[in-house]
Length: 270
Image 1 (cartoon, helix red, strand yellow):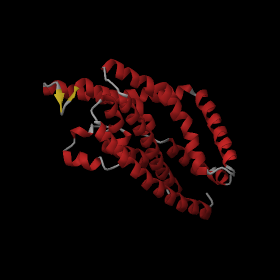
Image 2 (cartoon, helix red, strand yellow):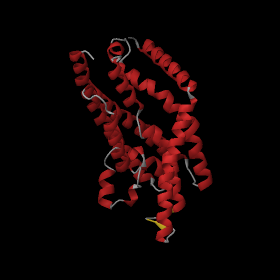
Image 3 (cartoon, one colour):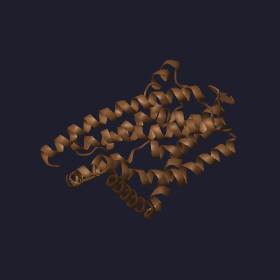
Image 4 (cartoon, rainbow, N blue to C red):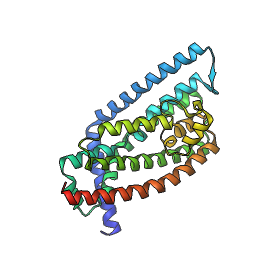
């Protein structure tokens, strides 16, 4: 397959999946509503914590800052918190369609990621961006060009990381009957370790420092914290550098996992 043919094929897949996503706009709306509702739980809990503690600031974070943090998380979590490739791989393997997809001239792995992009892109443009813009305007957070660049880099690296992790989780469907329960449990671990339940600045310094060496803060704490100003430029740059290292590690791990999964599929004839 030549480079030009490959590009045309991927663009065709993107267009088809974009149209399919737009045909079911209610899915985007429902995802947004559920995400906002889940963040309301944290907002209510933290509002009570600030109220009963009789203080305007906890660990340097005001109540308005805390509320802004979780609203931003509600905007980015559907993209960075749960990779669509897990669902797609599970369905392909359980239904047996993966055998047909593997013999296509287009790489199954690449097609898998390309098919997930339209939904994430549309959600980001029509849900995530408006919510984050409102948070910035209402909260009065001053954003410089460098802050926006750091935020964009964190989002991109975080998106690649969660999809690589999702690919490896989805690969387990070859060996297990149903991986949804396991995947949900793993996603909760990611959320806790990444600051999706409690901002990392509330963790003990040693624990927070250790977690910053993992890829998980790029899924929650770093992008949300950078946008509202609780993460410094130095911390953001350190997280980006760590994320790039993890990208290389996870890409190699995903390639190894797929080679074994592909062999298992060919052996058992999924």
